[in-house]
Image (tube, rainbow, N blue to C red; front, side, top):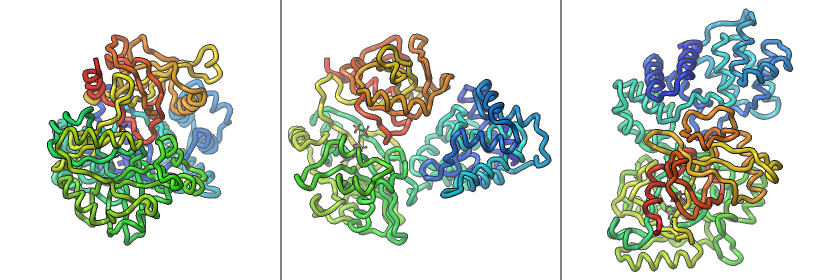
Length: 577
Ligand code: ATP
């Protein structure tokens, strides 16, 4: 397919806010594309040339995109910038200029040709790469028609923002196959195992639903991580699970480890599937030396450790290891220990559908269970089989006394359910002094510019919400104006600056009374602690957080990992009277 035709599809989608209509247009598009083009188009829709978990990024700021445009069309930069401010979008501005520009180079290019050029652009790095990037984008602008240029320049800026989620693409795959969303659950399950929408699209085109049913874990493609349900007593846990495996709940950060001995390669993925390998060289070394397997995918919690006093560090200290600079120095100061608790794949065999006991047995065979934090980096999470409520409570108390967050109870015959929060894992955490037994992870949706002292920060309050998984919209639960340190306010503003937009994102459901000065596109996840959840007519989630405070930024969580509408309803019902 020609890129110009793809642009007409993008244009049709751009004008729509109904999910169903977008799904149908995408399905129509997918039916017209071949397998390779589907893969490429889906990456471009996400503003990328590779799946989200791969490091390849465009690294092109608006400034550089504008440089490419003005050099390509030979126009005056201040004039272009003035028009850009008027129209408020580089895509529309370049389209206008391109309409008036006569180019002898203009020609039809296929999606594949444009994709390969964009891939070359994304992959150029090092000295002089900026000029190469500008050259590639200028060349494409000269060759493509005006409408194609509108969408082209948005891609390297990650500004496609056609207003739909990965789930809409999955629905569209189903629609393309059968004219309804009927296959969504199966396609979604496959996507949780291999969260690469390009791969899933190619597979559907080539093998249909038969291919989808056979998707298994793949080394160096992170699996969407399983999550735990919550309960708050030993009694409830026994009622739910009967005999179960009880493990300490470490408060560090979760890592999924992919290791190929043959390739001598380790890759570490965070909860939101970011490749964080370079940040944790000590864990990489530990895996190579202490894991005895040819090809493996395991999971664990990494936590900072102080060898002098033989003690684990609180989250606030561990988190300092998440950095892009001075990595080696910090690794010496705060060495990490990785408590492994899951095995998902081993040398060609998937373990996700095996019961917990079998996964654990295999895990114990690839790592020395005698490892200890003084000498080793990789330690197997200790666990005890318990079926007695009082013993579970005791284990919980001991974990708290050891400075841990609580315990995780695991169903003995439970499978590993990628991407799902389910009852196969149950977390039992220290209850706070408040009535609610857990914090709430919220999406930052917008902010008001500050008054009084806050004018210095440029932000006085921010609006947060939870995710309604049925309607696929974010609904508000609080406008937070206190409980942040000066430094946190500054950090919040800095993060908001990157994502702010004047128009309300399509996936936000807002009551008029909660309108803000500036909207923030989905991207910032914060953990909020509140004293109570109350009912509220002003918030679209119908609940409000009382006395909310910021606990921390949850960079390890993706925007669909925020607390769901059903979870907040459950927290509301469960809070103490
Ligand atoms: P929380 O905010 O309560 O830490 P979360 O929202 O990050 O939880 P959940 O799935 O709700 O994620 O809680 C499970 C988390 O607990 C896992 O993501 C993992 O990072 C951590 N964890 C610590 N120890 C264990 C363990 N032994 N087994 C499984 N998960 C563990």
